[in-house]
Image 1 (cartoon, rainbow, N blue to C red):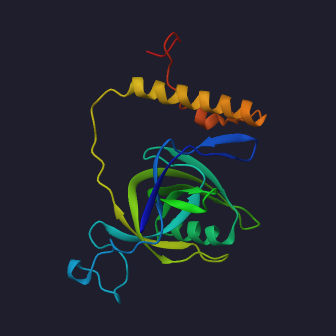
Image 2: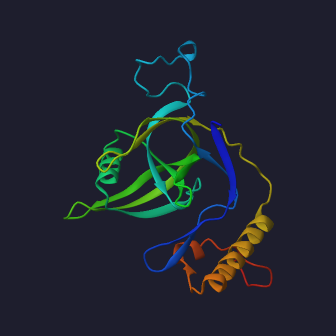
Image 3: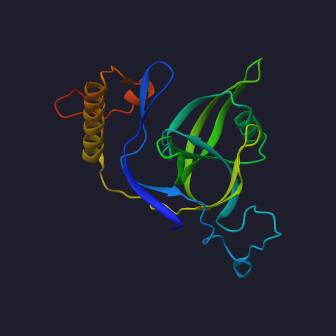
Length: 216
């Protein structure tokens, strides 16, 4: 089987004892299926550099235990050497960063991810980097073109997805999702005897719930 999918909700402990809600949807994992890589007839040959061929491009992958949605902002502390290289290269304009949700339970990453634009880049004296990243367009991984190592980040050929803009009012759906998220967190804490809480940057995304005073 070249691809797989599973239902999953993943929460991971982060610095400060907070929980990150990653996904509550059908996750399609990347299994190394190269069947959808464009053929030579479609404009891509084995010897050709895998860069910008229509809506297909080679990017660097950054697996993380959460989902970056288009339009969202995500601060990151980069300390591993391979990802220092990735973000330094991205800041210089040499590569795009693609964030994919990593599932530690199955040691795989999702096949669909989001381009992360490095909006703020602060190098520290010891080589670590503080960044703020903005979610842009979504993509689907076609093929890993370079496996990652301690020094090298993963490279992959991806196909960009065309997401349609909708005018539908999603405020009720936002409330439903937020309610489910808080319920799952509460149940998880009760089940595992923990007291995890959402980070402030996630709480700031909370919709105005019915009965609460909201801004006009």
